[in-house]
Length: 65
Image 1 (cartoon, rainbow, N blue to C red):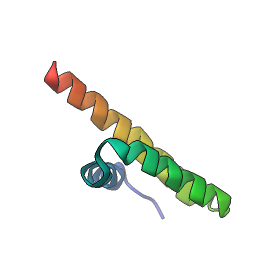
Image 2: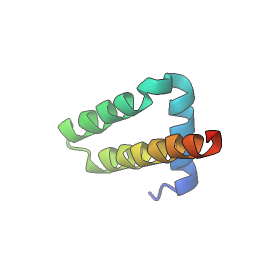
Image 3: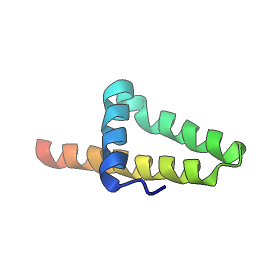
Image 4: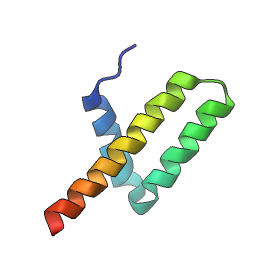
């Protein structure tokens, strides 16, 4: 199943809204969980979410100053 960039960014935004400054750490935990359980597709999805979270953080810094 193809997961679009839109869905990844929505997931990242939701995670950021829910976990705030802990969102990256929580997403990293998800990557480790899926890797431990042999689910490389799930781990890859969460790696994409981490990248999107970093993009959101960078965009926020750009807007502020």
